[in-house]
Length: 174
View 1 (cartoon, one colour):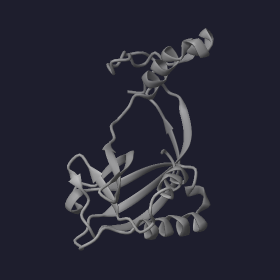
View 2 (view 1 turned 45 degrees about the vertical axis):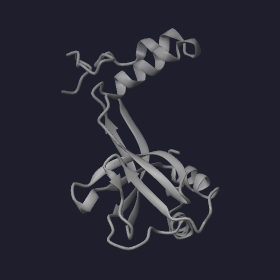
View 3 (view 1 turned 90 degrees about the horizontal axis):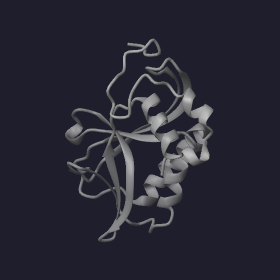
View 4 (view 1 turned 30 degrees about the vertical axis):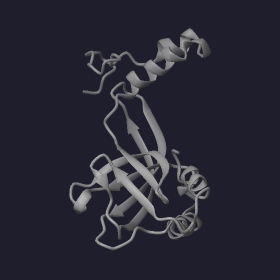
């Protein structure tokens, strides 16, 4: 469930009249929450190994609520469908959620799991963290070495080592 389209596909399998509850490790987002914004980004960055990359991101921003009921799934899906109609590029971009309990300390969160609990559709959000892309790619190449050639593995930046410690080389930015 990495994109808005994937999220919508999973949500459409549930009762449209069910309440949609967002939850974090700190607890549920209060009833009466509000979808404040859906944004799309074209991002371009350079990692610590000096590799330039471009990608797309989508952000769903939620405002903590003070209402009596959680938003019905049908209403949330309607918001997403209208947003995709207006901004079709939202559909396939990697989706993250911006939220802060009590509307404090806005955090960037990932979509972790979608479950049905006591007649409610619960979308569990997880914490995000910084990652060293060269080390992450090196680990992925090592884990999938049966499917990758040795030359591609050797080209992965040696800027960082798998445990996240930096190795000071000319390939690192800082």
